[in-house]
Length: 252
Image (cartoon, rainbow, N blue to C red; front, side, top):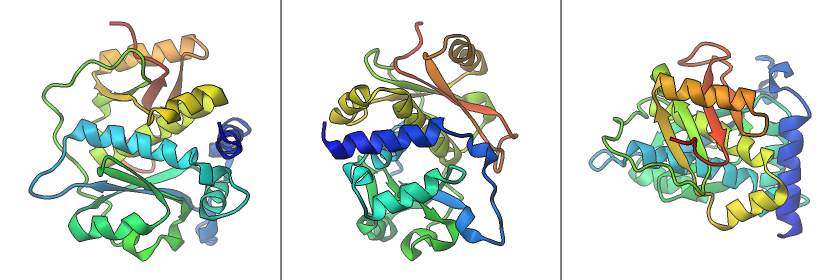
């Protein structure tokens, strides 16, 4: 493990355990207080990808940005952007990209996974790079997959409340929350081992019954998993539990 990775993990842990993001005040008159990690989802019109593959890639891209060695350096775009974001409410904004627009954003600081999702270094929402700002926030939905393999026992699993009916873009932001908070709940060694294998994970858009079981498991077994509750700005009611992330899948 490099010193930079260890420092990136320490910064992530400090940001997620030292305070409640809900206590942070956003001031519309001070745009710098409204920070977000922008995400681009590659959704070509003629050959759209599978929904689950995009959600997995989005979750992996977010945690990869947070634990990138550049995030553990002394200075630079990753350090500065994440430091500002960690000090404010942790927002994510998923946008649709395709063709040239997708290619154009690849040079901006961030991480791309499987040519499906790119998470960018966060910024104030008023300072989003032009190539990202032109990407549409809406129309990021795809149909649910007919058949999916069971989650791999050795890898983390993120359970999404399918009963909420979230669009894929909203779900992508939520699983991004889940992957970064799960990494923060790991030791540095555990997070590094996960990183070395490319952050393998499963995303399960679960039935209300399965999601309720996952939520109860996380709330009654400390350390088993992390629960993501949404602020309620879009699509779901405030404090809705949207994702539960576990180090390994629930037993059948």
